[in-house]
Image 1 (cartoon, rainbow, N blue to C red):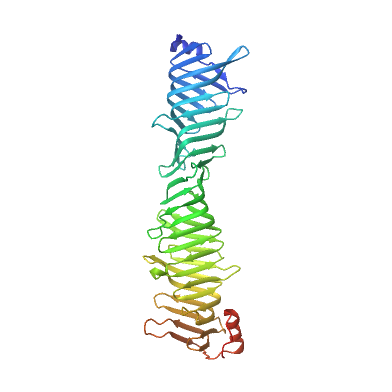
Image 2: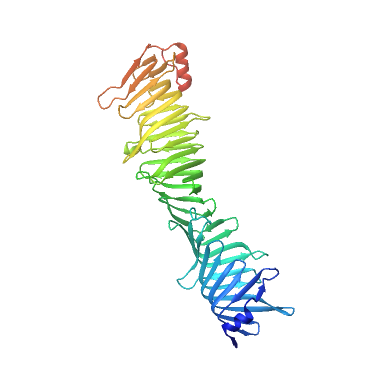
Length: 457
């Protein structure tokens, strides 16, 4: 084999260009020494290849050429040892072995033993907003279009994505398209595993990362998270989107969150979880929602609504607006329904605990004694501290209270009800202009709203 030293390379080979098949794209190479034999060119020492994608360096390379007319054009270049591909604007791919296939317009980069292909760089050019990422895989394939530019990047034989040394995604293969979306797929009968998202750990059948928008999407997502010190639920949803820039998780489709032995929350449309550095700040939902408490832990509560829910977690307040059907709240303190609900809560060992409840407009109340107490009001307030229900009517209106156990009828601007404990009797007090017998229209209204059978006036 004929050997050519570096000095001759500078004089003879410097500036030799190889056009990519069928295009005007050029490929230029340099090396310390070059050997040529037939259709094969061997490059050794400080090999540098200028490609449309960027600069490629390695320790050695073998160029296989093909004849087209009177010209010998490169068919492939095999790359060996300490390979680095420098991509614009600020990305690098390093590996042990590789090949540039000019016939297929592809570049193959291979791992070797315990050294995977490493693809790293920044998501954008800004020094302020740039986020560092790293992708590891057994094989990285660059598919090029007719102009020699990236059409598709595939990472296979095991994929690991890391963003800002914080978020990690493990899967079997990944696909990156020029629209700046990276899709990660699991192996068959398995899931992608995601960690580091503000205390959230998840798994999914597909993970998609949108680089410019800084959004991560999971299909058929499930997992667990640490929203706060006391909210650490297991969850699953048809689709989960994490908007890193806006600091929000969005669960869409059917969603279920369960705080083990404390509470279960269901939603059939979408839930937004907003957070900051300190943790969860607020929650907003749309669609039908249900919350179940835990009866064994003395926090039995339940509400169902088709209205939007807004939760200010810092204030411990839930606000719900009704739509087609009324909001229904149930618990060991009774059952109430109305058009609007404000609930102040705490979270402790017993789970979700309603401290104070305000329900207004078209309010219906049924006591805890097997639906033996009934009431209609415009506003009802419950306090856990006092254990009292305060029912109020609007100006010139009346609260209608009916107790089947004590055969009591009460029509008054305000009614206070408190369930007795132990040997204590229930407390029922009217305020304002109190009447102890219903008018005909009042009794008819109670019968209609509660589907009561004929009751004695």
